[in-house]
Image 1 (cartoon, rainbow, N blue to C red):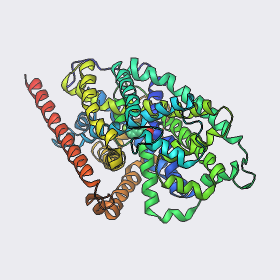
Image 2 (spheres, protein in one colour):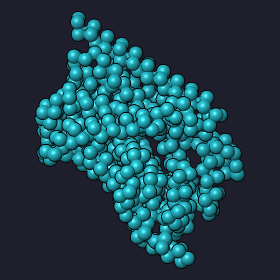
Image 3 (cartoon, rainbow, N blue to C red):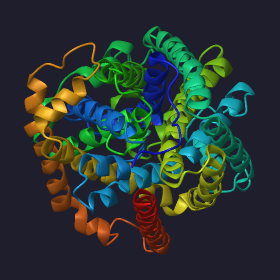
Image 4 (cartoon, protein in one colour):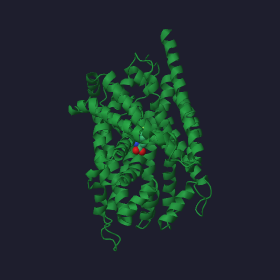
Length: 520
Ligand code: PFF
């Protein structure tokens, strides 16, 4: 069932590593990670986090690079085709692969909108639009006005936010339109270094802050770091903290959702995946733990102290990044420039991730329906543009949170479980081990054979079961959602189910067409 059309390929090894790292390093590193770490007790979060990295994140990174490269060899760049290539005898496995297109689509719909805020704030910072705001309440109002949650002295309606959303959306489409090598790779190759330079400048600024509040000498940089790094073993007993840590690892590495599968499908047979996967993971962890953790957390700690920082993070995932950070930077010399560095760093991190979220759907249309890139991007852009409106206009009704739960949390774990089972039990561990090492520059330590075969699936199983146990019923019944928001959430769920079913029908049609072609 080899595809007749010649598939795209990456230009260079550095290029694909930059692109995968670009996908991984995103808003999750700089906004989600600090918020999760602070809410889950700082140092208490880091132990389950690192254990999840070693037992889930890294194995899945290798599995996805390997499965992707394998499926790409058969002309398939998305999970339905890749799963089918692994387990040809099973007629149903391709339908499980739908999650690998659906999940990224769901994340894309809200991710692009949040990304557009960072572009808007880059301009606001540079032109001093929030420069005079000096307390939490006014900065919070500024954000709420911008998001359209209220009309106030700063913003009336959503028009400014919508303009930035349009610009961001068009930029995304433009990059994807130029393809794997000419668009995504080319963009990531300059965006990633710039992002790291901005990150290092901000980090240098933070570590030289000292203890700016004379009344609170304990609120200093070293205690700020201690907040994240002093380990607290008591949290290991809390299954909630484990779930949060594992979820963050998936989200931040972009694994368990199909995106890396698609990127890796553009590799050639002999391309190394072991070292490349490891390098991409290490780059992401540097950006998350060293930059993401060291910029926002110590800064907020120094200015607001250990108790307030928790309250700020718990009051909303965007507060640390969009309220506390600009507020603190406003107090420093060159506030406009540093504010711009911060938000433009977020924007670059965001856009290199969102283009990766678009790629599975595009690849699906190209590979399975033989559409040209132009047509595939056009269809994708029109459809997602319509779907994005829900995130833009119904943010206040919790639509973004709902999409984030399904796309950014639940399906990641489910899909990862399916991938591991396929890899270990259908592909067979010996086979899989050989496949990983084809063209490899280094060998994975043998202990990982054991980890991938037993620990990773068991760990995933444990996470899924404890989820069902603790959170399933309230989620299904919308227990934590206000009565007035329930209709919006219900409509979102119905639309999600519909989208899933449509993808199912498309898979069916694609395979039917293929069988016809094969029988001819
Ligand atoms: N890893 C990205 C981040 O940390 O922001 C988000 C993401 C991108 C998740 C791509 C999943 C994905 F497939």
